[in-house]
Image (cartoon, rainbow, N blue to C red; front, side, top):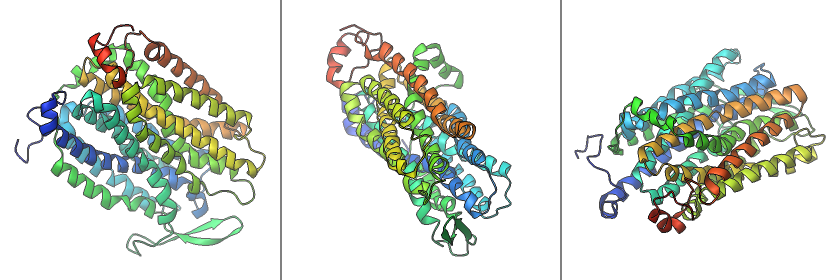
Length: 466
């Protein structure tokens, strides 16, 4: 293979000799570069959620519902773009897809930075920019299938858990860095002046809200160049038409439902959490700063996603997916019956945050376990398994759009988010039931064993009952 070629000449990761001598090194290098790229994909995808909570205080006259919709639009675009990304790797390869998609995200970041400096920027233009930020959300459905092709089945749960979990840190990165970086004139007057940040009961302050978007640009440029120089592509080729065969298998749809329960909930809550804090608890005396807490949820979810890759590989993903579904339901009931979604006092805020962090914990655990399940459920075709990973991630990426839009509508109509969470409980119950019936009950057609039981399962063709 020449230094400038894109496609590897051969790739057999299940061959232990090939893996030790050649495959492991290339796979781990690819995992490192694509994971760093994915961090910035998630970070730019969620940057609007960190910006919208500051817009009213610097002169933008948007309603609470409009702010929720701005937070929702990257999710709408990200989900749609993930459907496209699902089919890109077998056509264009890892090198081209990762490099070009990383560089594309520079455009909406620059546009957002320019928009927030002018309080006369119309709402429709912010909507267009929010949709363009969906580039970052779309990447997941090409990056993760790519990773699944580079690693042998026995390591896919760990590799995918590491990539998705560390990639998810991009959400926390945005929400953690934003409140700090907007308070500094790090670019001087080169990239615009400050805005006056008006706070009830507190003195006005100067902030540079454009920094929340501009600081990504140099990193995206460097990562894009590194990806082009060092990445190569696995020689698994298929046309768009050939890849449509995943839709003939009913398990594609069952996997989609369970992944919407896990990643859809993680991404949806991450997008809505800052605005939930502002809308539900912002009216009390000395209200909490949403960005001081919002990064904690994605941080918890990302950490547990990294940790759960290995246990899912060892024991199978389905039991942990079942655990995640039960946890999401129980925590939502606590929010509803505890009155934390329609608070009467600011004293309820600490418990609200704790329960929300538990929701992120269970959603993150399910993120890892479901991605362990999919390559096993589609073990007969690694290419189909990769495609299903991409498609399920595409549908689940509508989480920010669904959660932000419906939570905002619920609060606007009733003053509480309880209506939304009742609907979420109903969906999570259905997803948990499907996971139990098809993948957790012993003896089902695609029972998800981990490596602890792998020798026994392989001996029976992966389809026998115990």
